[in-house]
Image (tube, rainbow, N blue to C red; front, top):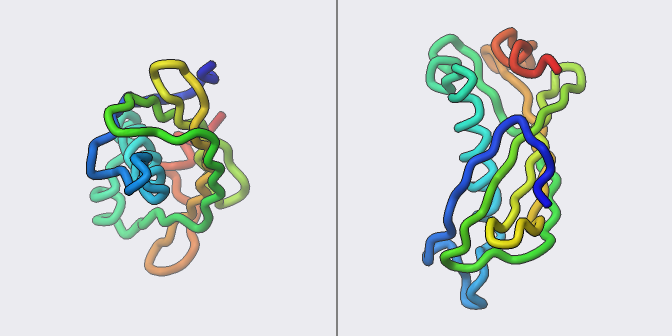
Length: 132
């Protein structure tokens, strides 16, 4: 059962993302969640290139991941995004569900911070998005 989310995107596993066992290589789950985060921010009017041009660089500080079920070539899946805030940390809570049966296959908590000219900074653009 897919939990309610602020944002979700439906994607499909490509053959080259699988390893010899025929399952998605573990590193690709990070790519999926990163893509979902970027699409979420774009949907809210935030552009990483614009932020960088203005001297703000969001970076991943920590990722906690849990693999529950494997995805296989051709599987369609739904990657969700929820948010929480902890001081100057912007935390993305992300789940991946296999679309065919809505089973949870992966969870991640992605903690990001924003650097401005190399120093930790509170980012007004993200603060507005992270108001819950």
